[in-house]
Length: 391
Ligand SMILES: Nc1ncnc2c1ncn2[C@@H]1O[C@H](COP(=O)(O)OP(=O)(O)OP(=O)(O)O)[C@@H](O)[C@H]1O
Image (cartoon, rainbow, N blue to C red; front, side, top):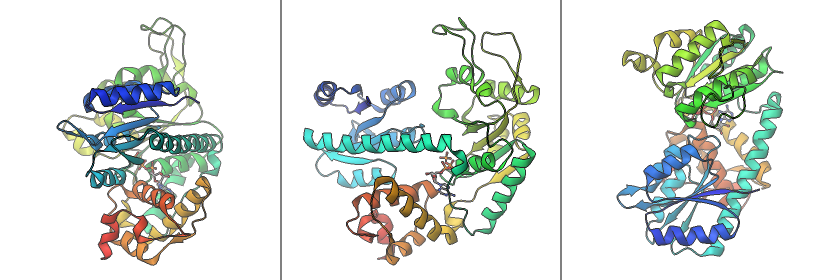
């Protein structure tokens, strides 16, 4: 399998040196001298691994993690630090970076880090394939929190009614899991569940992705192609981060939902589609409507059922269940023998506010599992700003 790598660094010699080395090893390599160029590349080209310098002239390299982590699948990022920048690398890893590497680059260390990232990517792909083909085996934590119990009940009713749903909540709270749960427990379970991360698709491409196109509809459309509405026929289309969608597209989606028909880009024929829509957003949609950024007619059309998922800090009673779940699944995934976390780690976790919610907890346990020496994750295995909370 060929991997694509994006090297982001302002030093031309450095980029060129790495590029030549990686090209020889059979990688597809792209490079960017600043974050703007890196963002452009990430929008256009599927990248597996990003090698990201911490300091890119006046820019702070890890700021790019925000964009990287919104992509699906998100590339694995290896932070490159100069002497004395290790703190920044640790900070970047808390924000979702996969690993770090110090300058000057030792190519055999780089090879080892790339190999580790590649193994994780392959594993993730296998997992995603499994999830895709056996959605009915979705495994997750329901927890004890009363609000969450109510949410799962609402999700079951929504699934039976096959109604449109809008799921709100901060990033990483589990909106995607709720959407898959609605699919799993309803009459559409044997039909497709198609997730689309709206901001990850270029606005110009989104329309043809969703509605398909006719041959010759635009430059490059050399064959007629079905869109995701047709692919999801009988099932569910999950529009993740719908708030990022432009007004034009919002109008087109509204029409498709109301008419239950779509038209290919460049086509005249109306094609009937039977699709349940689940949308998710981590923004305050009512504020967006007030500011004229989101159409109220689409909002109310989606809002037949409204599910608001609480942040992890408001459901701390579920922390032990989540820890147990992640320790077990991660140990199985990467073939480790970790059995739990120490009491001190639980205490530190309880004091932390988890701005990245359950996703952040997952990452912290994943990283800690990789670095852990024994069977129990200890304070020294978790990021110091969390560990320091109990000192
Ligand atoms: N109830 C749960 N049980 C197990 N894992 C969960 C649960 N909720 C969330 N997660 C994990 O947390 C991570 C983030 O979840 P998810 O993608 O569903 O969040 P989200 O709210 O859709 O995030 P975003 O707004 O960034 O798209 C995933 O790794 C997911 O597996």
